[in-house]
Amino acid sequence: MNTLKSSFREILRYPSAIVGLIIIFLLVLTSIYAMIKIPYSEAIRLWRGGEDVWYQNPKFAPPAWINFFSSKKLPESFVANTADGSMSKTVTPGAQDTGTINISYSFDYNFDSPPQEMILYFTSKYTNKQPFASVAWLTPDGRKIRVDDFGVSKDQTLRFSQDQRLQQRLNGADPMQALFEDSATGAIIKGKYQLQILATTFEQGSDLDAEFVFQGQVYGLAGTDQARRDLMVPLLWGTPVALAFGLIASLGTLVLTMVIAAIGSWYGGWVDELIQRITEINLVLPFLSILIMIGTFYSRSIWVILGVTVLLSIFTGSIKSYRAIFLQVKESMFIEAARAYGASDLRIIFLYLIPRMIPLLIPGLVSSVPSFVFLEASLAVLGLGDPVLPTWGKVINDADMNGALYKGYYYWILEPAVLLMITGFGFAMLGFALDRIFNPRLRDI
Image 1: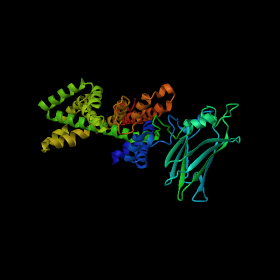
Image 2: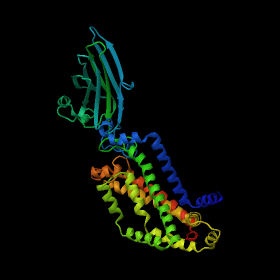
Image 3: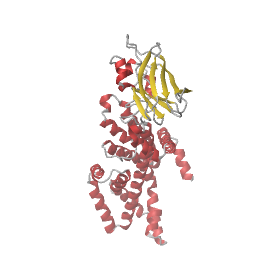
Image 4: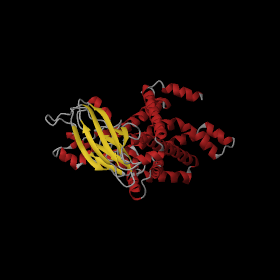
């Protein structure tokens, strides 16, 4: 315990270690928040849901915070409906089982460009006679534009930009522009807009509800992709996936490498020869190519890739480095004393040899995490990532497949790339400091 306290006090002497610890702590907090806020099953459903789940979101929308850095303000997305009371709804009974339903929604518009799309989702209840609805659009300059009139089925959708009768009333102009722009100057008319829906029902108990989806040019904290998915989901869930993959691969590789090197050094003979020959063969094998082949022909499961990564990373040059140190420790006086009082081989290996390597294990463990994190992301960028999990590499792969850099969707690639760099930076900073602490020869460098 005293050793841990002294080591921690030593860590606090290095600003780089403090920065690294803060970054890693924030990554761990983000991972915990992601797993609590979005359970695993929900994250998978959202990631694989596509437009059926994210129908309210615009496509290829940058994050909303870019408005703080731009003189041209882009419209933000929102949703209103009669079910939660955000759209006002008034029902007036009429004669002979008829009724009138008045639905309206007003909002202030202070942006410099029109939205991507406006959609009305109707849900009606009737037995034989459909309700009849009239939709109108009121602008701040006093115009009232008739959008459409139609009988409403039980589930019906009205997309303003695709409504042909609305386009005819607007003389062929794009509805998204004509509904918000001054026809004379082409400038966006700012102020209060109102959507009005007047519906008539013809049966007792007949009803109608509406949901108004306003798909702006920007959305949320991270933006959206080609399937309207909120990129906050893969950005949040990519954190625990990246940390888990990196830590498990790093810890498993270093511990197994050390144990195998210790066993070979202690027993010597054919055991040591076998380990060295396996290591030499493994050193000439194309590591990344083998992973690509497994991902292409066998499985892209992250657990399969993790297992193969650990297996191929055990017999590396580290075994020879550890072996050289173990051979020196093997001849120490305390090892001779352990032999003299009859300690077993396993006791000597695990209680006397391996603990001597712990100071070298800790810096190596921390420093190797980023390499495994980038390995998982690299495989995903190549299209060999786990098809189920939302990860940072998968986001970059989707962005590349959809030409994000050529179409100007820089946020789509930069957000996961920055998170990858921050993760690598945090572990590298802490690893360098730990190397100085546990390796006295580096303290004065």
